[in-house]
Image 1 (cartoon, rainbow, N blue to C red):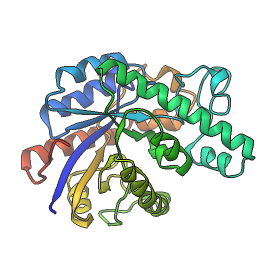
Image 2 (cartoon, rainbow, N blue to C red):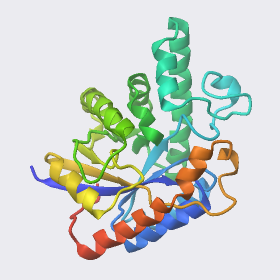
Image 3 (spheres, one colour):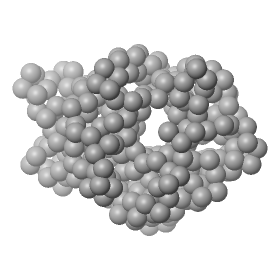
Image 4 (cartoon, helix red, strand yellow):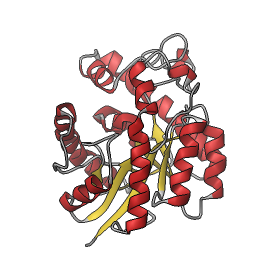
Length: 285
């Protein structure tokens, strides 16, 4: 089995600016898969632009349970959102809330997580007229075991991202990401087995977590070299928000800083180099 690579850009549809900058690297570079945030500000625009490129581009649902506004009504998912419908959990607090919750609370969290993920999948299913959906998670929230189990029960899920990245050094990664990578690697073994037992496709390897937000050509190639055989998914975040965007997300400065960071521009430049140099062979999954 040889190594096949697909390059993906996350956060498609979050804002018009982010979507437009992602579209630019799709049209000029090697991106062949985009992950759409259906609770974003520009989801309808993103879907319309995707349809124009669907012959050469694949779309995944970027399931979001931690940032922005939920699609479901607050009364339907009270353990996930505040009274305005804004998500209240980080990926860590959501997992801990489940682990240390009562049996009744765990059951409610499972039901609410499935309700919101199903609502997000329905947006793309309706827009594209298809029951076969590829999915992944914003901040990889879908890798939380109970979330993953509920995801497997949602109609139409055909492929899911596995965040199985071998450790490699190409610069200095965040110590937090080093620890989280280890946890994700353990979770990925179970998740892969769970998905494939249901006939749901997965990638074999992943590159782009250790250096998330700081990817370049060298890190991509180093990650591929340390991955095993099979399908390798490489994650980039090339989209930049414009001034005045992300209205509903502005209460969190860390979120704003992430989506306006100069590193986004550097990742776009890296994708152009990958395309120009032809060092990475890729396939349309």
